[in-house]
Amino acid sequence: KVKNVILAIESSCDETSASICVDGKVMNNVIATQEIHSKYGGVVPELASRAHQQAIGPVVKEAMATANVTMSDLDAIAFTQGPGLLGALLVGGAFAKSMALALNIPLIGVHHMKAHILAHFIEEPKPKFPFLCLTVSGGHTQIVRVDDYLDMAILGQTTDDAVGEAFDKCAKLMGLPYPGGPLIDKLAKEGNENKFTFNETLMPGLDYSFSGIKTGFMNFLNKEKMKDPDFVEKNKKDLCASIQRHLIDMLLSKLELAARQERVNQVAIAGGVSANSGLRTKLEQLSKPNGWEVFIPRFEYCTDNAGMIGMTAHYQQLAGDTVPLTASPMPRMKF
Ligand code: KG4
Ligand code: ZN
Image 1 (cartoon, rainbow, N blue to C red):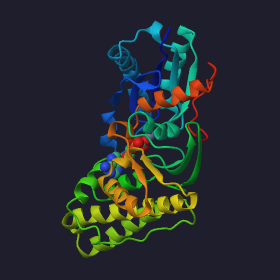
Image 2: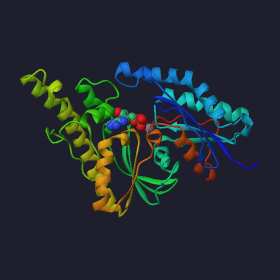
Image 3: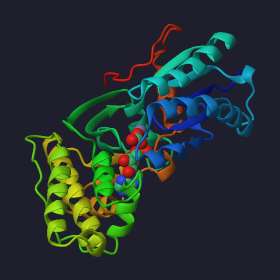
Image 4: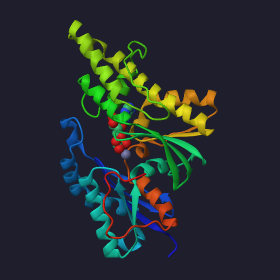
């Protein structure tokens, strides 16, 4: 047999995804997004598990069909082992185990956050080692130094909320639906980012804190609403632009510090918040004075997807990094 075929499954949060990876090349990336959570203003874990349970069979079937792969072609099954929601991880993990058992092929347990970083190797241009990756999502905010595919270390991270969470919570305070991050991005385009300032908490070193800015934003809104009940409606675009500027400046000032400290000039971003147009623009602007080469994956590979799980599994397989059928999901899997 000439080709090595991996089926990868992602089910850590609210997307059910499957991908076929052949000889380290991601062939496709089937994603079923769970719409059910938007009316609850956030991901409801119990509903996520049920939706994964319904979607996983058809999603895997579609990934195999569109890549022209049959059961007997598969050489390994990869799945997201953690971090993530326990019930959601259980669905993907149990499905992956059943297939590995039935086909008698290796099982590869993948770390979701490492996979977000290795999403940069799915398509060109690819960063060179060593590089820094700012991983920003609804669940995580980390600056990681990447020395090789499977050799990476966290330099700094949030001590409370993730930045995506801060976007979503601030959006909610303005009465925007979940997830509010993309809406803030959209409205900010027509607003004045220097109109308002809010109190924020500055952490020492390379760590972040985003709960302070959220409280600062809330207190500011409450104070203004006492004076004018329609304050938010009248100033929504400027509020969006101003809170977005704060959050992005917090992210990028630490990234600049990390790049200087580590003397690294390859800089990447990953995770759902890397879709933010303000973040992308400011990162490009910073690249010139700092001499950075900047890498941002296509949006499909920024948010949760199984393509990145397949990519990571490819390198783990080369390293002989597999797990037994007794492997458990790890909601707080160590980096
Ligand atoms: O990586 P992701 O799809 O899921 C995980 O959290 O793992 O990230 C989702 C987060 C949400 O908080 C969402 O509001 C945020 O990414 N997001 C954005 C944008 N697009 C998605 N935040 C700001 N601007 C955007 N354009
Ligand atoms: Zn993610």
